[in-house]
Image 1: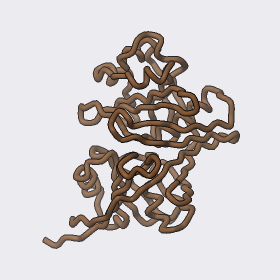
Image 2 (image 1 turned 90 degrees about the vertical axis):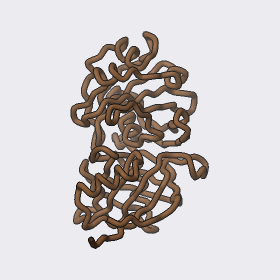
Image 3 (image 1 turned 90 degrees about the horizontal axis):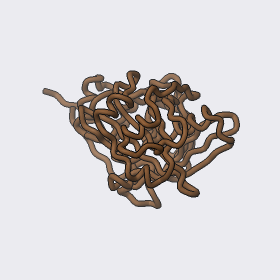
Length: 282
């Protein structure tokens, strides 16, 4: 049976101070034309990273990008967008990527890349009470410090503000309660994005379920954008900017930049490092 070789690159996105093994891993198939959807899903499962992307021709942007987790396709995600942009750019400082969620402009300089959120935020209320959300996170009553919201700037996530960074660090979600109160029908996944101000930075963690297991993401650019959407929805003063710290609990420290402009534009920034390249025969 004849096989075709498809080139891929391994990257880390939202890295910290040049540490090659910080940030969130990503695999990018840089010329995926000819691959069927089932093959893309199989390759993402084979790579077994948070996400794997596939670069295709586009009539609307510089490239069309499909994003797969090991289990399903996503309309948008932050670290795959930045990492893929660094590959597609090929030395340019600006590219437009066509995602399922919409067109995303990404700008870069050296190793740092910045995207504007795929679409203006939409929100919906959370059914669970603050006490129930605290219980869901394995935290005491009073842990939730402000209104929790479902936010969508490209992919929907549950954004929960906590009273202190210590509560973020000690959060230990109860899987059954996360499935009950943190389930998103639009994403077919349960999740919780928790955050708290820590001086000049914000400490964040993102929990989610996959194939029945409770997992934690090293760095979540889409949730960072949704935090910006939360800032808009709750009427926080603008412009707003912050550095987010994530991933320490899973041994992958990550740094994410967030900016929300006065016009409502939401921007997510991070450094990208390429680790290596290879070819897979399909």
